[in-house]
Image (cartoon, rainbow, N blue to C red; front, side, top):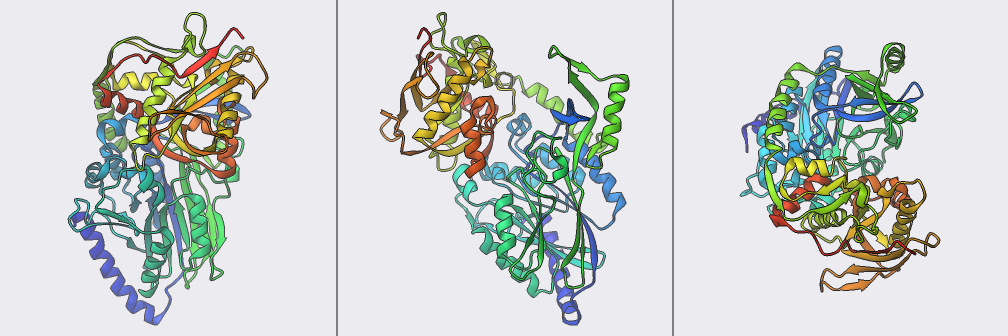
Amino acid sequence: MNKKNLVYVALSLLLTTSVTFAAEANNGKPLELTVLHINDHHSHLESDKMNLNLDGKATIVNLGGMTRISEEITRLRKEDKNTLVLHAGDAMTGTLYYTLFEGVPDAEIMNTINFDAVTMGNHEFDGGNSILKKYLTALKAPVISANVTADETSELQGEWSPYIIKNIDGENVGIVGLTIVGKTITSSNPGKDLKFEEEEKATQTVVDELKSKGINKIILLSHDGYDNNVKIARNISGVDLIVSGDTHYLLGNQFKDIFEYPVMGEYPTKIMSPSNEPVYVVEAASYSYVLGNIKVKFNEEGIITEALGKPEIIVADNLFQRKDTEGKTYDLQGEEKQAVLNYIASKDFIKIVPENPTSKEVLEKYQEEKLKQGKEIVGKINTLIPGGSDNRIPNKKNKKGSIAAAIVAKGFLYELQTMGKGNVDLFIHNAGSVRTSINPGNFSYDSGYNLLPFSNTLFVVDMTGSELKQVMEEALAQAIKDSSSTGAFPYGAGIRYKAFRTGKVGTRITKIEVKDKATDHWRALDLTKTYKVGTTSYLMSGKDSWVTLGKIKESRGAEDTGIDDAKAFLNYVKYKKNITRPKTSNVNYNFNK
């Protein structure tokens, strides 16, 4: 067991001893507690350029960033000494910072924030035990997960504990960690020396243990997704507050019409437990865009009698832009900028926050390294591979269309088929996601992120053959419609099709085949069969007129693997070493008829 967790285990034992004696006399005393929290920042250490609807107009701002989260947490901690700061997992995977430095920058910036507890998400396991070990070694905060255990011989043995106990204003508060099981096993790369226990069962066991020690104020720090955490709240007694991660849900009706994230529920969401006591569930979107903030009042019996949620969108002070009537971007000046600043000042859920100097110093060190290492070569492109806006749709000059989109899809499918159970059948995406042709010569990290600049993640979804055909028909119709976006044109890997330019929606595609993984033979699409399909986060939201995908996600959900698209293709290039132009784009498109 490492020294970090030995210290926390020892403290917890001391606190447990004292609280057991105290429990014999009374149930404790009332407590007011503020919990600040983030989840799923996915190595988004810098602010991201995003649109917010401010004062009724789309406004481009720099959103979030761990250095600004750090500064806001520092400010709020000074306002309330009874404050816990928690991270609900998936700190890693998603940007070049992870690709190059494997979680260490995340840990070092998290150290400047001084989290009280951190749990592990499924993406902490993406790089296997060795990279997780690297991250945990660099991280100073206590790490907790009640349902993941390491064998005695594992290099991860002792790196985390099921829970910690914090003494807040004389009261002991139990904080239990939880990691989602299914997608960690199927879509990540945990070592075989790690064991996973079903989430509710593990939670109940640890909550019962804490209650037996006289602790009646319990927080579940759970990377099990909002919907699963709501079920836990309904099925288990003894948990008071669940700080959720994994689903990237934005909660809080105040954010409606402000943020491009859909609002998925109230902040906090109140659920009644089997013992008819309130349980509050909170989550804070993702990518360090939102800082969760909830203040709760416990009575002497450990029941929350009041909960006030004040989550905040974190905005940088260095960028405010809009587009003019011609679509050109301009910086806000004078009265227009002041009107936006006044609007933000009138909303207590939008905060303009500067960077924390200490966190910024850590980030700048890695920014410099990222610039240097971004030029590192991962493989070689042997011949020009056409892509970009001029090649999105097959045409007289290029009858195969965006071969670059096809080979990128092949790289994505390779990533999904070599992760976890690898049971993905095919991958589909749009031509517009691949911004340029792939030029011959050395291919670097910078090359990958210039080719795929949108920070999409890879999704996996179950679809029938009928739904798959409908999605592709919709995409094709959008791409060839007059004055519309050619970027919607569909390409894929593990799938090929024949289509005509003319005809009604639903009739243009005359043949679709899917490659059988077992035999490596092409077989006709079975409209009644269910396929496991890979795609991107952008399309899974129904964008670019891939409407059916959005409806599927809304109605029955889809799995966000969290795998960064550029990183996935870089992994493929690194694996292949040399990339040659494929003979086909898997699209047979008759542009004359």
